[in-house]
Length: 366
Image (cartoon, rainbow, N blue to C red; front, side, top):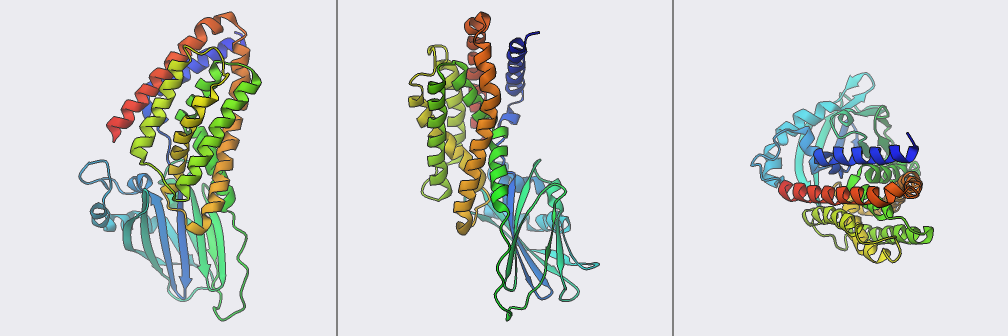
């Protein structure tokens, strides 16, 4: 079977799967948490911030009243449960001895974040402490934990994920000379998070696929993609910097409608010429969707510029990688008469239907 025919059927099969398993298309999980660790004598304080959707994976039944939102009262009511679920999975060791951990507080933070403060008491002031983040197994696939540890004059940053889930903290006398912090590794974590977010954000990918499906000159297609990139970069910056961001309850259904719109419009446009005019405003909406991933964990203000740049570069890298695969296949398929007459129309209606399914799912889910 010719490659272009295979591409057509594979695309149909993928859309069929998404339509019948719409929950897979809601992949806007942050996949990211952060932790502030402070070692003072024999005491290690760990303050962890999770997206609320991830926190719900740690404690079942967190949404006690079933209203779809997590309240401060529900968080306080689940404080003991959080302690039992989290403290044993965040393993702190001083040499051969394990430091005993207990929950100190649990509270909501800005956007969609939830913070847990835990205290770990070691038998004696340690020569070094090793922290193992086994919680990575309890959270969404590919989860990354940005860990920032302070001890005396030393500040270190590590990215804990997969098998690389352990870091070491060594105490330093506060009266000693200032020590230059180790180089931060979190830029790479935010970069890879951006790549994962776009590649697992199926609605964004379907939207882009619908835009290029109609074909056209390379210049027109490049302008469409550039307009989308510029637009979502603007709103991503506005949201992450705290200037303004609408509620995800509004943004997510609008993203779904943008997918449906592109599918319908494909029935009437012949190529991508001048299509950037509609791509730009839709890109503004998608940018707010991208921003939700960073907003859920309330990135510290000092780290916002770094996180914003790295995450946005990751989104662009993932987007370009996806287009590098899809666009040549689409242009090759469009050279076939059957695809030009029937394939584009069928796939466009499938995209429109998929957008409607996602819209209804997100409305009902709220």
